[in-house]
Picture: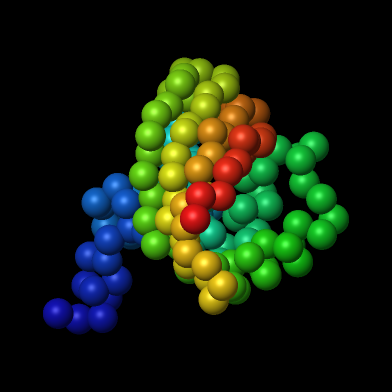
Length: 141
């Protein structure tokens, strides 16, 4: 198998079971937009796993962005290994919706601990693009 085939066949970090090349990669690279809130959630998880900080900032609602976001996110992606995503539920967030929520668990490891980040995230569609607004977060170790 060639290197290109290995990359093409590599499973997407988001846990969809699809190849990365056909799942989150085109979304994270800006080649297409996420059609649903869940798809945006999955692509953001993938961006955290791969260190795509600009994508994380660009898919956060403008009023929720801070001046230090890039520095904070760069530290987070440098020291956190994301090991699995489980979508627990979605409410709205479909192609024709303007808002939605996604409840999920994301397993992680750092040098100091391993655990699960539980979050119920809020999303909204703005000018046809889904954005992460905020969420209720709990770290479970």
